[in-house]
Structure formats: structure tokens, C-alpha cells
Length: 322
Image (tube, rainbow, N blue to C red; front, side, top):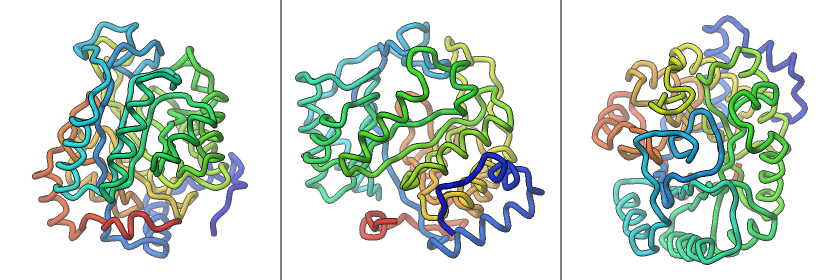
């Protein structure tokens, strides 16, 4: 049953179930609502890299940290369209544009992003953007240009949030999501596992996501990829069972959402990824890089899909409303 009135205690009860029982429940929900063999394949491109004024403790694109990630200006439209064309040829049905901005500003750079969205939407692909905070009028402009979805992650629980980010509060993230929703955009919103948070924080994140009405259409679950130079450079990535438990709980709470196994797959075994797909993950990012962090290559994903009997979701299915 689809609900948006989950209490924190109810979410905790699901999350803390014996893992085998939780996996079985999540797999059953997944098969009731989705084709378990179909996985949406998306491609994420960093169209403006580095130099961000935010202090997100996990992010190598923050101007506050000394990392190997350089600062690059906004890409030109032709190069972005070329990347989208290549992604489509390789089976991607959604193309995501990421810019290291704190917020969208009404300037020539935003005008150029609008051009990118317009061009890619005419290629029979879903287009998603993650550009930081935005106003409702900016969201409406993106929608008019053909944008399908807006990504803005909560990252972690409301209680743990200030331990990870101090330059933007949790409510500001919720406000941006409201602006996107009011503009008629699909919402992509999830979080990061492995930031040093507790089980209670993961429960808090999932409760925040599942209490949205409607639920986010896409819920990316990222595993921390520690990057040298960031405050979390020495943080251990989450273990396999924590990722499986988080994804399984997300599937039970948000049965119709597309749950994306996102950053950190390169550090996961094929067996671990298989279990994540079994308990409800039905979306991935393809390509050898997610913004600035490494990702499994196309060949590896094709081989894994073949072993598991999975296939890339068609655009017709991918675009079907939840």
C-alpha cells in the first residue's frame, strides 16, 4: 500500500527487521509493482565542475577543500548534446546534467542550461538536472524547456544534517523540492549512506523521503566514495548489508518509486549489487564517471546484466508515470 504518513517508529520497525525477512518483503513488493528484470539506465554529466561555495563534507567540488578536482566553467551546448547522443546510443534513456552551483541564478549560464535541456529533450530522452537551489519560476522555466526531473538530495537525516553541511539548512532543500514539484517536474531525491551516520539517521532519512506526498519518483541511494582532501576522506564506505537494508527499506516504504543504486558501485561486488537489485533497486548510472567519482564501465555493467538476466528499461516504460 502506498502511504505518505509513515511515522519514524514504523520506519524503524521495518528497517530493523531481521535482514532475511526484510529482503523477502522488499523483493515481494518490488515484483508486485515493477518488472524485476528491467533497470533504468541513466547517464550523469558534470556540465560545470568544482568551485562550489558549499561545504558538503563529502564533496570534492567544494572550493573550501584541496582536492584533485579542478574548477571548470560551464560546458558549451554542442559538447553536452554530443555526450547525450553517445549515451543514448549506449542504451541510456535518461540524461542528467549536474552543475556545481549553490543555487541557480538568472544569468547567461542558466540560459545555456535551458538550451541544453531543450536540445536533449528533443532527442527522445528524459532530461534531469541537479543545479542546487532554485526558485519556483526557475523550475517552471526548466519545465517549459522540456526538463523531466529535478534532483536535489536530502543527503541524511534532519538531525545529522548539520554535521555534514553548514552552508544550507535542511528546510532549504525541502523548499527547492517543493518548487520543483509545484512546477510540474518529477522529483529525484535520496541520500548518502556512509557519512558516519547511525542507523537512526538512516531511518530518519528514509522517513523524510517516505513522508513526501507524493513520494519522489526517483530515490537515489548513494554509498559514500571517500575523496582525499575532503573532511570525510578517512571515512569507511558503508558495508554491503547496510546498503541492502537501506535499499530494501526504501522499496517497502516507497513501492512505486524508482530506487537507484547510485554512487559507490565500483566498490561493491557483483554479488552485492545483485542483492540490491533483488530487493528493489531498479535504476543505475552508467558510464565510467559520476560527476567526479569513478563508476563501473559499460562493459562491466553489460556483463553483470547478462549474468543476472537484467535488461535496460525502454524509454516508453521509463517514462510511464508512477
